[in-house]
Structure formats: structure tokens, C-alpha cells
Image (tube, rainbow, N blue to C red; front, side, top):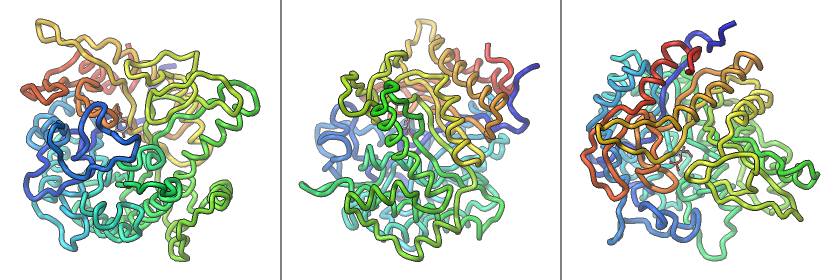
Amino acid sequence: MEKVFPEGFLWGGATAANQCEGAYNVDGRGLANVDVMPHGKDRFPVGLGLRKMLDFEDGYFYPAQTGIDFYHHYKEDIALFAEMGFKTFRMSLAWTRIFPNGDESEPNEAGLAFYEDVFRECQKHGIEPLVTITHFDCPIHLIKEYGGWRNRKLIDFYKNLARVLFTRYKGLVKYWLTFNEINMILHLPFMGAGLVFEEDEDKEAVEYLAAHNELVASAWATKIAHEIDPDVKIGCMLAAGSYYPYSCRPEDVRAAQLANQDNYFFVDVQSRGYYPAYALKKLERAGIDVGMTEEDKQVLAENTVDFISFSYYSTRCSAGEGSDAPKTEGNAFQGAKNPYLKESQWGWAIDPLGFRITLNDLYDRYQKPLFVVENGLGAKDVVEEDGSINDDYRIDYLRKHIETMRDAVVEDGVDLLGYTTWGPIDLVSASTGEMSKRYGFIYVDRDDAGNGTLARSKKKSFDWYKKVIATNGADLS
Ligand code: BG6
């Protein structure tokens, strides 16, 4: 029997405003944390999330200023997505385009109009927008004046933003995500929640406080969305990839269990509507008070998400106390190095079967529809003399992952709404700020230092993905 995805499966690609839009100071846009992050080794200069710079400084190149200039190329880019047969396009909004400082009561019309144009362009091509409200961006003003998401006032600013968006785009956008990779607060707190720490501050306490505020804001957004339009679907978004125990040594198994709980915590709250027992105990042991009010409890309980979205790049591996397992620094999630897996050029473990395992883990746990909103391979591409780009490695990665995703759906019965690859068009890397870490089916002529024409061209994978979509995943050859 031919294996295909369910009818109406939403194939597409995913981007984020700060990694592609550019035009950072155009049409009244304000400055955000993601704008002032340089590329390369200085991106997180004082250690992950301890960044102190809150403005541009001489001597650095800031890739988000220009991105790939999606702001001025969106029609061309969406037409290319349509040519591949996209059913959906995941994108995010730059908060500072709509509220330049974040705490105004009235929005910036030029910012709202830009996104309306983008959505209408999608509609013209029969593409359903899937919109992330915040993808790692926090207005600089909210960081300087309020300390970012550690401050409960941000819940109100976010509610205001949500109300404006759901009202303005009613009928244009059906699928929304509240926070991209919400669990990244614990790994990249400056990007995840605009957190800047003081010396000797209890970092973990601040992170959980910010996490609580984002979780409550997410529930409020869900409530507001459903009140304005009962047809919209609101999802949470997790940086997923299950943790394996490094071995069957009970200490390793327990370490993996704890690491998984740190991730599940966020979805547990967003999907079940209350703090799980293990999290309450953990916070109690650490003496952390997140300031939960009766109103918080109620809004969390009554406004759980409609679906669960996640990114998947790799699985992770945990070793408990007493282990001599070698470590990997491959991505924001550090851990033991899995000896059975090959790694990408950036040291991210490649694990297609782990994708099926992660899909099952999430579906078993939540029994809600899932949506894969990021998956892909960051790799260096070579442009041949004739202009062609033969990215067979990317095709190979995606083929193997789509195959196991199909098994999860067809053989395991996982309820999956859709699949968007990360960066269908090359864009700025979130973790390194490089352009050379490319994910796209569409090449963008731009290098790490900001040189290049920004011209778009198709890679070999472009036609391959087009065929995958046209056959609804039956032909992956
Ligand atoms: C996810 C993010 O963590 O991974 C994206 O949601 C990011 O913003 C993607 O770009 C890939 O990571 P990177 O660091 O290779 O860009």
C-alpha cells in the first residue's frame, strides 16, 4: 500500500522576522534584542544569555539589520514558495514593527499594513499563513525599562499586541503560535525572554519567573483569540528532540528523564493547564516563587492550546553523575555525545529515527494534534560555475526525516497537521548569525559579512521538495 500523508496535510516552510526581514529601521519599526546581536563568536559574548549590549556598537556587523531583505522581496519569495506547491508558510511578526517600544497603547499602522500585505499575498497563492507572534524578539525598550519577561507588566503588553493582531487579521490568519521555542528561555534567555542578568543573581529563578509570565501571556492570547474568532487555532511551540539516556545505567536514565521534564514543563502547562507536580516540587526545592496568582491559575486552566507545534533537528543524550561520556557542544542543548549518530557541519546530531520517536513521545503524552514547524539541515553550499547548487546532502537529510515522519503518521497513528521545513529560503542563523549556515531550497546571494546581491536562485532541492509536496509525500526519491 502506498504511504501518503492525510488529505489537506499542510506542507510548507518556516521563517522568522528577525532572520529574514531586515529593514530594521523602516516605517517606524523600533529596536529589538535580536537586532543588536552580532554574528559569529561575539553573538553571545558573555556566555549564553548573559549578553550585556543593548545597542549597536562600533566594530560589529549586525546581520538582522538587513537579513535577506524579505521586507522588500516578499512577493518574489512567496511566488517561489507557491511554485514549490506550499500549502502553508510559517512566518513571525516583528513586535517592534507593530509596537516600536512595546508598551504603547496604539499600534504603528505601517507595521500592521506590511503584514496584511504579506498575508494577502499568501492568500493570492492559496497559501495558509501560520504566524508566530514572537520568535525570539523582545523590544529593547521593554528590556531597558522593565527587565524583559521577568516583569509581569509584559503580560499586559503582550495581551495588547495579541488583541490588535487577532482583530486586524481576523479571517486572514487561522493558525497562530504564541512563543517560538518557549523552552529556550532556559538555554538562551536573552533571545528567549530579553533577560539580562546582574552579577550574583539567581539566574534560574529569573528564568522561571520569565517562563511563568510567558506561559500566562500565552494563555491570555489563546483566550483573546478564541473570543475574537472561535475558528482560529492556537498552538504552543517547543524546541523538541527527546533526550536519550547515554546508557541503561539507571543514573543515565534518570538524567534523561529530568532533562525531558525540563522541556515538557512548558507544554505540560500550555496543554494541560496547570503546573505538573515535578515542576512544583523542583521550584519549591530551589526556593523559586514565580508569583502565581489565582487569576493566573484560572486563565491557564481555561485556555489550553489547540495543537502542539515543535521544531526537530536532533535528539539529545543525557549522562548521569559518575559518567565519563564525552560531551558535545553542538547546539544550545549541551549534553553527552551520542556515539551512534553522525553530526552536521555544526555538530548537531542527525537522527531521523529520533524524529519518529519524538513524534510518538509528544503524541502519547498530549493526545492533541501536532504540527512540525521546523526541521532541516544547516549546511555550507557550493555554487558551481554554471550557478547550480547540488545540495544532495540536504535532500538526503529531509528524505530520511520525512520518511520516519510518515511512519509516525501512517503506522503509529500520530495526528499531524503539517510540516514546515526550516528556512525554505536561506536566512540568518539564530545561533551563530551566519548566512553560511544555509537551510534553503532557495539560495540567497549574501555572505557572513553582509556582501552579495541578495539575488535568489533555486537549488537542486527545490524541485525535489516540489515533487514531495505534489505527491503528498508518496514520492521521496
Ligand atoms: C530554531 C529556531 O532553534 O532553530 C530558529 O527557532 C533557528 O530561529 C533554527 O534558526 C535553526 O538554528 P540555527 O542556529 O541553525 O539558525
